[in-house]
Amino acid sequence: MSNLAEIERHNLQLNPVNSISSGVYSSNSGLPLIKFDISSTEMPTSLDLSQLRISGKVTYTSGGAAVTATNACFRDGFSGDISNCIEHVTISSKKLNSVLERVTNYSRMIPTIMSGQHDSNDINCQLWNEAGHCTNNFLARNVVVAQEGAKGKTFCSPLYCGMLNSDRDLDISQFGTGGLTIEILLKPNVSCAFGADAAGANPVLCEVSDLLLTVPSYRATGQSAEAMIAGDRVFNFNSITSIFQTLNSSASVVAVTPGLQNVSSVFMNAINTQDLGNQLRNSARLSNLGELREVRFSKNGVLHPNQYRLFSDVQANNVVSALNAQTLKGREMVVKNYFEALSTNPIGQFEKTMVAYNNFESGIKNRSQTQNNGGSSLGTASGVGVLFDAYGNGEDFSNQVFSVEFDNSTLTGTAATTLGLYMFFLNKQSLIMSPQGVSVNK
Image (cartoon, rainbow, N blue to C red; front, side, top):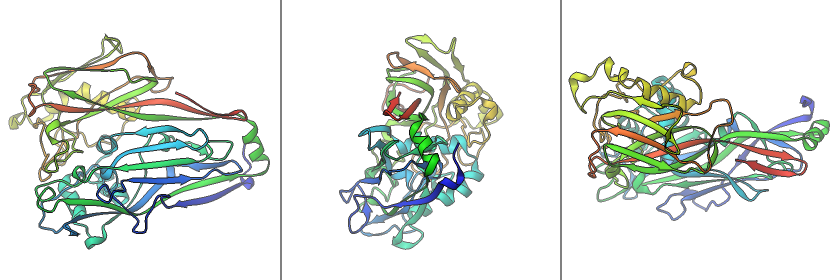
């Protein structure tokens, strides 16, 4: 037990170690990588990762000037200011000289987390003030217009990595990880702002600047420090691993071997493949999965959990007469398991969401797979998931095949209907710190 008199609290404030004189990061400028270096300490020093924040400005420009209010130019509302610009985030231990977690397809994951676990009050209030999240792309257009002229829009956001959201303090001293390196790779401009003018004669460019990483730290001294150094400590966290696949037929089967030993849950979202890499379209949009009839999860070709079939009853897309309470009731099994996968808790412990049959901004009405890909109309909050193990060691897919089958009559094999599926695996890991050294149990 620590003696509070022997604990010193500090607030670390760090600038990127690879900054240049302008302080601007962008794929267009040739500097898309942002790197923060958190040094090791001599005495046990724990970071309060739940309070880690990255702040700065996001600026959109067209032809070297601010985007005007007349431009048809948007960015994804659920993603928010900084998350909309990020390709992936990597966290490494300096002592182990190895990666602890790499979250790829970051800007595809954030819309699912925002819409799946928050309601409109959360998103349009607290999360808007933090990082410009909002409930539809049309509202986000004000951000692209750069409310402060060419100076950009400020943000102060957490990073949604498993390690940084474990609700545990992490020792970065020489007796722990030996420091941390956090690297953020920005997306190409074509995947940030989108719309008719964003892809016009003067393509819209996105820049990130004035970056600062802040995190509280607690330095132990005296007998508290000695006790920490002498004992074994375990830091448990859920790492996030992303895999991309395609769905191109009415009975699409995705089979992968994730190579992960302790999978807690898997959640997925989709987008029409014609929208990827197309600046006319929103590459972070959550596509409606169409006329989804059934979802089946398997392990090594056997339904798992036992007889795990999620039935759905979705009528033809864009049938206005079908937009009623039955729209959601027909998807009850799919939606329930999606919620559980996101929260890694049973449905009874799930509180807020944007998923609703009649939600103005992002309901799951029977809309087409390309709904709101241009930004000016309403979008969807849609996804699929499965919770394997909320409390134990997780499911072993280190050498076993994880597969999911979708029965969807709208997927015809043509480019117009093919969906890109982004899969996110939550895998339980342990960072073990002892007098003998540091090791990772995956």
